[in-house]
Image (cartoon, rainbow, N blue to C red; front, side):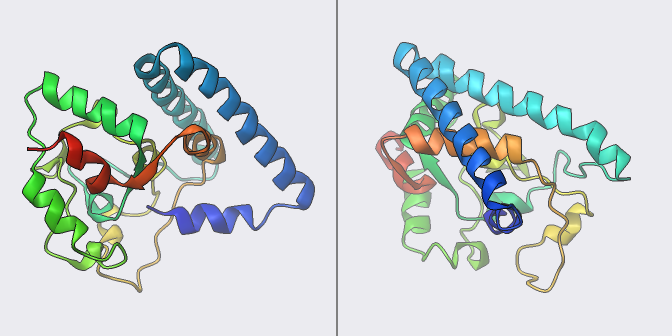
Length: 201
């Protein structure tokens, strides 16, 4: 999910900058933990909302650089990658699917799990189980990692089978910070198909 880009950005930081970023992540995790202890569902939705607000904050900065987020409805290349989610996210996704009559195909999830995670993007079962007609059917509750993936280059360049393509990822450390905070407080993190199996039929 573009994590290699975020890692590359972190490697450009000085020791002082890295420490501040880590401290901010820990601070965000502590706040999130307190919120989760009160109301898990509401805390997660609030986290997602804050991620969206932070994304909007980056738009003026991008415009000054002559760039803009080029991701749009219908482009779904990043929906063909291996994704890790938390058990908290799996639960809220399952609840959303139940409320909106969205099936979670157990047979399809099992086929995905049978494929090595490093090869999933090249397989015939690469598509996310919730990708329907090139659109995310659980968009309001999509995992936090899915909210960190944005590009400023042509979306068609994101085709995962072309390893030579240079993709321009949008650097949004304050958004990624909230994603990392969630992973820090999660009791379980795993491949999305694995954590969704208990809720599938």
